[in-house]
Length: 332
Image (cartoon, rainbow, N blue to C red; front, side, top):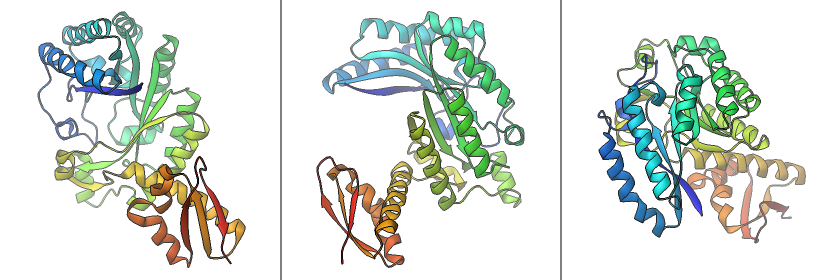
């Protein structure tokens, strides 16, 4: 049975400061935090849909720093979610939340365990203290380490979120962040290339020509490196790039955002693997054998891989081969 998240957004509620990139209204798509009654209505409405589509869901409180919101409000939400997990175990299989690394301690973990929380995601963003300070994160890399170890000690799934292209960031810092995530034994990772939104500190720095995020091409290459790294470490990357949002599209002034970013990055990885095999074989005409499900990755988003190889004088034809991930032969 497939598993998904049923996301409940708690916009900007509880955050102790505003980070350089944050304009939470547009990221969450809402300014109003839902009441427990509204959450209950959403959960009730989705039970039938999940059952009919053979889906199971974790109830996910995202959008703000969940463990920093008003304690009574937080407990009402957790109680509501836990009741639905108990009543509909075939549809709701756990509770997930996202929060800041400096908003986790033993008392918070005891509360989360009491209500059956199954996963906690930390918005680490970077493990470089210079980057964290420059972007007004208000916590250090050591806070991420302490919170991560505590979450793992309580037997709860650890998710770590990183951003690429922040103010004062470097690709090498991003790879070092990934290495630390692996050392902390993250169970899942999300990668968010920086999107510059109107009204943020990053936007002001951009206007003053004091900040330039990574380019689209730099980001694609970096994210390909990151995906390959986490794949090697058997750590699932459960999200690459912000979800499609009209608010983000209308408010962004720079950075990297594309609705198909994940597909583009996976296509780039496929291109690397193709070029490696082609280089070994020699020549400029090839047949690529691959499973039907991988054809779009071989050609690349909107044919990008085919176009990039053509610029190097290389052409290829695709032939389907069941269960064959990638096999290339040269054509005389």
